[in-house]
Length: 507
Image (tube, rainbow, N blue to C red; front, side, top):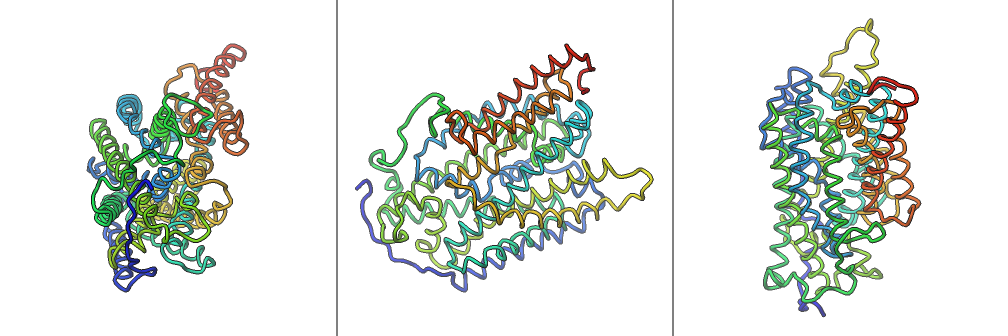
């Protein structure tokens, strides 16, 4: 055996009264914060951008918490258990990410006094490109939030609390409703404050689980395998689109994801715009990267700890399934069988915190895009203007309802959690950035060429994700669609100007 065998008594398979008290206190605390900040929002700018005077440290932690959802909380430990630690080497890309985002992208966004990032696209490339970007963003974030609900309830909570599966939609609805209420009440200020609190909760839950396993195994080093487990993928360097995990693949994927998300996603751009200047926006991004490094290290240790614990205690695995087949659910299962009463409730609160921090930011950003890019853009000038603050709150409620409906279909996507995220959540990440790359960095770009470049990038992403085009693995969906979209945009723009001689940025 790779690990020394130990036997740990089962602490329980149901939540205790203390656990429920912890969970209820957490939910009540989030609602209180939303109510508290609802009294401070006087204008739409206060609600959507925190008055553009948010604390950079809090904004940085908020950006980290937004992007580190339950999906990451469960996906990365599960991926390590199944395929090994190579995926975590992606953090080697962070220095380059910081340079590209901090010195190339953030300054360009901060110079433009906008509420929605997609206003920039219309200024540069015309209305059609802006509308395509809005469609991509809304599809991306609605599917992302739906996946978060599915994973949190149907994977995480179901592994912890063995309830009747018919209750999954109702529990997901309850989780969404609580998030909607504190988000719609308090706006971005409430989102940022709750994100900071939730960051400490879910990182603390991961750290606590590692400590408990190390204590039970007898030492910290006991969670590390004595030799490379046979079921892990072999350690390979370099880049290979036909291989799932190589060091080069991990670095490339994380670099592309961070740059594309930071340079095109309203959730990220909204955080920059909520600070007072380029310096503070860059500081916020740096803090978010530091927080991510800590989180990645903790989640890698969680994966090692779960692998060690369940390898040493195979009786705790579900009957009829191998450790590998249960990889994505081992962490939430450990919460019930390895942690004492009260502590289980705290770590479950961590799972909920990871979900709710991301959903709150998603609801806020999606409602701001709908308000600015659709309602305001197409409202008749003769029509009476609605109260902007009330309007965007109503849009938060509508967004939540759509997300709940979409969450019912996420479970139909095959693969482990990382596969689901790549195929569903990250499908539009690179194509969306293609539009911004053309607008910000290609002076001769035309609207018509950029529009079709975005369509081509989406088509390539779908072909790789669902038809395994060219045998490319899911980790290469974003890099391939990004390069294809940019090349297509440059070639089509050049051809468009040569043949039709439009003005740059016009179709």
